[in-house]
Amino acid sequence: MKILVTGGAGYIGSHAVKALLEAGHTVEVIDNLATGNRDMVDPRATFHELDIHDTSEVATIMKNGAIDAVMHFAAYSLVGESGTNPLKYYHNNVEGSRSLLSAMVKAGVTTLVFSSTAAVYGEPEAVPIVETHALAPTNTYGETKRAVEAMLKNVADAYEDFNYVSLRYFNVAGAHHSAQIGEKHDPETHLIPNVLKSVIREEDTLKVFGDDYPTHDGSAVRDYIHVEDLVDAHIKALHHVSETKQSEIFNLGSAQGYSVLEILKKTGEVTGKPVPYTVAPRRKGDPATLVASHQKAYEILGWKPRRTLETIIESAHRFHKKEWSM
Image 1 (cartoon, one colour):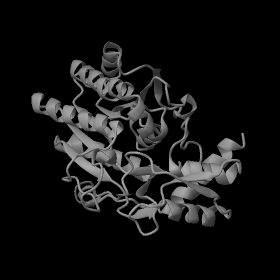
Image 2: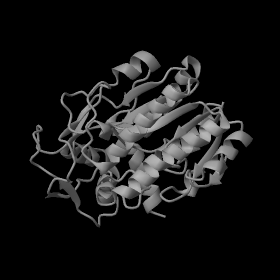
Image 3: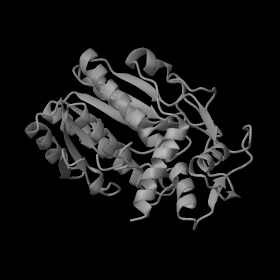
């Protein structure tokens, strides 16, 4: 198949590009490089430095490339920033998605795999979280993803041949097994790379945000999934929606929760260095526990994560040691 990947120079998008190419697909990438890294894009893919708000040009790329389906990763994803600058997030995440969907309609492309988030759930009513859980985001980022999911349903209702899969991620971490690509954010807000930075650079003491959550050790509990497991699910979802022509929503997580303090302990075991940390106040909008049920993805897609927390940390450690020693 010929796949267009938006946000293909970003962390998850670049891994998806590489996995799609390895699976034998032809890939074109659109990224405006606002947060992406050009050097993360596999050279076998065709790259377009372009903003998805340029509806006409995106439609032209789809037509000229005879695109069969789109994987949509292009979004801003900093929870804190989304609260202080909500209009930036609605413009990019929601309006950008509207522009992309308009381009798909113009070009006659009818299949989409969408990068959503567990943030659409908010504070969970029950754990593990299933796809039928009520949507009640506690931050603007989650609200924008919920808005896009609603838009996708509306478009699928209006256009009989349009179908999509929305994939609600939990905490994505790790790096490609080759250590060629991995997580490169500026600023970096995700836990595991920041833990590794404190170990590798030995210049920053990690901040643990909150030690008074109603969890077994007081720190927040999250469900971590290796980025390569995540993109495996994307390819399975792509094949599923292409074959069945049925829209679906899936959680992607490990169904296993780890607290922040457990991540620090495991990182120390993997790297052989203890992780220094201090405790800071909770961040607004951070639920105590987020753990996914991936039962639906297993039953329908035949997918479940294969890589362990140790593999996640080890792969990220190899990538960041290479990056931060350059």
